[in-house]
Image (cartoon, rainbow, N blue to C red):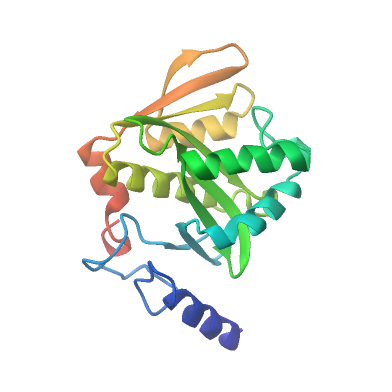
Length: 208
């Protein structure tokens, strides 16, 4: 385990957005070169999760992540269940959206984006592999998107959530989203990216 941790630290420190030399970020106060939110996160199982902007080289891994996504956990008919539509959908998102991927060691376990990337109000999508549900990772991915969208100058972000996904609705509510429309089978929720919220999500780990 110690060797594995060292290898991961060395791998992660070679990343463009590396900010710390150890995994546990709880005492980190940040630097001038830090991204809008610390890319390191310790989940509820005590496991290190790394969240960073997606790179071209991540495309195949992300396709594999979605190809194995169980049908029972799809939302709003997404991700598409077959490879052709899935790849077309994902490529559109990679072209139009700001994308971030979450890794547990070298495995892609989550994806969050806001699209269009240059809109004043973008739509949020977040997916976490079911093996990693209930570990705080989805919430962290949302906070990553909020922090970066605010830094990019967005005024708000929106999302749609199925009426029956009560856990997701509660999570979004705790993040500050409010319901702005009821479309029958789904709710539309909106979050204003105002300064007090951005100060909170962009604060270094030691100040949270």
